[in-house]
Each structure stands twice: as C-alpha cells, then as structure tokens.
Image 1 (tube, rainbow, N blue to C red):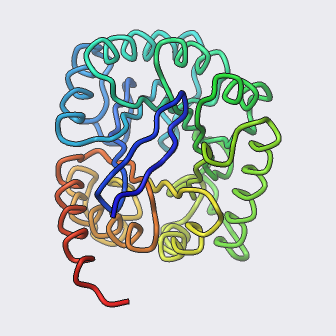
Image 2 (image 1 turned 60 degrees about the vertical axis):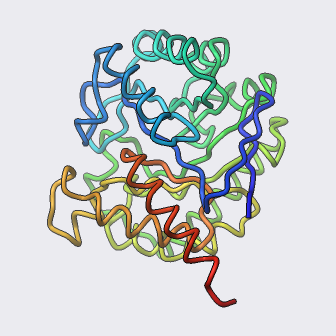
Image 3 (image 1 turned 90 degrees about the horizontal axis):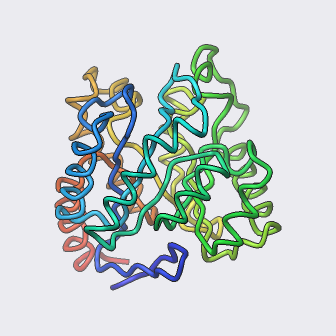
Length: 284
C-alpha cells in the first residue's frame, strides 16, 4: 500500500515500500564512516547521483560533522562545503534534498539553491530564526533529540530516568514550537537521535520503542546506519556493521518508522522490498 510524506516546497513523495530512504552524503573530512565523507565536490556529486540511482528518495547533505567529538564550524565554511554541491545535484536531478544544519544562514542559501528539508540535530533550539525561515520558505523540518553538543556529548555517561519518556516529551515540545513558528504539522518529522548523548542501552531502548514514537503524530525518521550501538553488540568497526544496521532498521520500520537515513541505499532498498513482500502475507 502506497503512503506519502510532505517534504516541503510543494514536493509530496509517494512510495510503495514500507519506508522512504534518505541517503547520506557528508561533505566533511571527519565522518565516523569514511566512505560517506569527502571534501572533494566531484566525489560527493558522484556519490549523491549514485544513491539516487540506487533508489534514495531523499539525499541528506551535511557540511558539519556531528560525530562524537566533532567541533562546530562557521556558517561560511559550511556553506562553502554544501551549497555548490546542492546546485550541481539540482542541475542533474530533481531529487528531494535535505540539509543537515542548525543554522539559518546556511538553510536560507540551501533553500535558494533547491533544498526542501532542514534536518536539524538541535530541533530548532540553537538558532531562534531557523523555524521562522522554514515556515516562510514552506520547507519541512526534522526535529532530533540530542543531549549536549557533538564535541562533548559522549564524554560523560548520560543518565536518563526513563529515556523513552524523556525523549518523547522533548520531541513533542519541539514539535509544538515548530508549529508555533508556522510550520504545518504535515511538514514536521521527528528523530529520537541515536548516538547523540546516549548509551548503547539507551539507543536500543529507543529503537525498541519505535512504535511509541511513530504514534506521536509525526513521521518518525531513524538514523541507525553503522552507529556505535551496532558495534557495541557485534564488536565490529563501522565498515563491517551493515548487517546489524539492516536488522535494527528493519525492526524500526516494522514498528512504524517512516524514513530511514542510511549510508547503504541499495542494501536498504533490497531489505525493504523483502519486508514489503513479507507484509503481504503477515497476519494482523
């Protein structure tokens, strides 16, 4: 059964698969998974076009690393990394573009060059003008939970009394804020923020509660691709975590996740095709 998602700027995506696929392109020198990361614009353009060919519904472009230990960069440096790349992609494809940024200045230029979605790890909490800009531009937003900032968020062991309730309450509050900025409910997505100020156990509790988050009233985006919680169970480095990623991602989708943010689009699409077939024969 087909379902749809409002990506903003007049773009409604439809899919026959159980979830939409967001392919990752990191225009940074320091992503935790090096094959997805490069400072070479031609390399990043080729990667984006390849992911589109493999079946990505959305391309998520980041110019500022948010891996644990990473430092924030200036808006000018971030724009230099991603704006020309967005422009080059749009010359060759009508793909939906998401931009992983916290900054109004960056997102304004991204919208001007054809982007649709602001994927904000700060959930509109670090730039007071960003929510208004997204509303004015009729774009969409992804609101993610994190504790602290990437540079220090994993240095102290996070402690939550109830991580599911804490994250759920935060996302609900930030969604209400986005609504107050004038962003329609249909153009708001939520992300429980795997790896952002959380232990491996916290991450698994969140994924196991995907059904709860998918019922908050907004499409749920999950970003599990090759993250440290997969390595905590398998004992494997990022380059060997694809199988574990697919297992966790499939579970999240079965529990209602609408968008999956991944490095490996072709493998994810294959998994979703098989899941769709299985769901045809499943019992209620």
